[in-house]
Image (cartoon, rainbow over all chains, first blue to last red; front, side, top):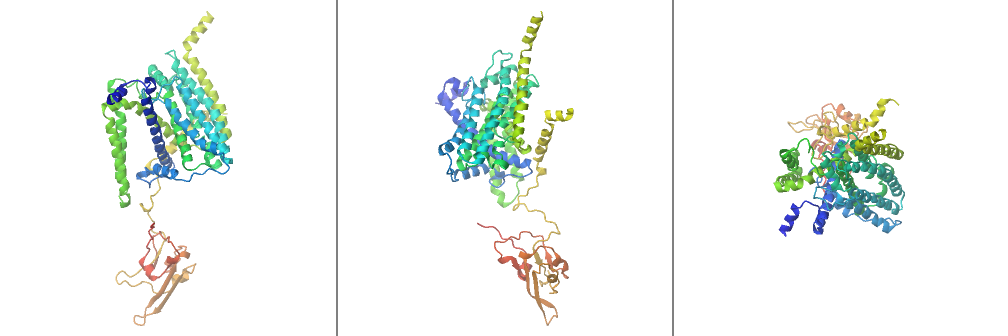
Length: 426
Length: 153
């Protein structure tokens, strides 16, 4: 048994490639749990960071600095009354949140957290992710339709129009990255792992490829992915000031929390597409300029050091807590949390763990940057009007996407093109 | 269309400016929210809150000479002072003092009118009560000063 685990840990392929159903199941469970925990963390972080951006404190009372607030929220949602409106289409109403959640989680099947840390390596990985994540809009329309109410219907119609128009720009941007994989190596690939390996083989992340072409394609994708996930400033389907809560107005309790879970895991999913396609997936930064075994060692220590730094931050927080009797439990709790983080950091210092985990760390760190950006946008930008949204989608992003696609193809094949022109002239 | 606004649009200058504003708002210096029951706000000296009747710190006698100026000054007429002359000391002494806090607008005219600095509006601001019963203060309550009611479940 132990040998089997050891053998597996030393293998260099994903469970899908190895044909190991057991390990695939283990990965699926781990990823599901990890995504759920990430969503819970995002809930807290979003409220906290958004509050700080608006010069507020955010949750402070439940646990130290409100750390236990998401758990309290989840408990509250679980024990809330489960209401289905009298005139709602019950079966559709019941299945809509399930569809949304399932699609959001299924996309993580092909997300490569590392060379070996993916459930499977599909040769149509990107296509699979796009297809499944655009199924999510079906769930949203189901929710809006079955609620038998005005606001949800309006919200879901907006959502479908928005998703259809932004998916085109998104697809064009993705085709750019797929074109780039075929350059120099000769064969293009849609596999998520293949795309990251192409970036590693070409020695550059695709965001820096053919500067500024890669960057512009990434920009188009970065805007389209916010619109795809219905986040501010493109959150018209759930515009609070206009539509109460959009497509999930009639939902409450656990069904509502399923929508919440789906929204945040969809954000994680599209961010991980962006990271895989343009930001080198699990590759560590500065792989070219700071190469060599010494730098490799230094970069492999960063995960541990960052966890230790977070633990130190917690201890600093315990010192700066107000010295009042009411805050004593909270102070101790924050100290324990810091100790936990420091313990994780110390575990990551072990050479064996370090080598296996740094891929995941870099991938997650990059995705976390995107999550911060999502919150930052929400804290800064006002919502678009619907005609402005359509204008940005069709009149700005689509032409830019087409132009970048053509330019990438021309620049990528410039030698062949030049040879052809010279041949014709001779 | 001139070039500058177009360039501003293309390079998202205004959006980036807004993002820098929200980013800098995150610093701890910007935060002004107080954790109220745990952190007490600083109250200014001239804040007018709960009234108090001062006593002579040496003898413990009331400083009030029942001149009735505060009752006359009060625009809401919520102060009633009754007193009678003590035949021995030839001084007027308080018989009853009531101050109806529920009608008070904290204008401070009574404290201004007071000739002996007996009546004073203090800086205490926690005046909320669970019923109207405690709103009319008598001499003893005024001399004790405010006693905020703790919330208990």
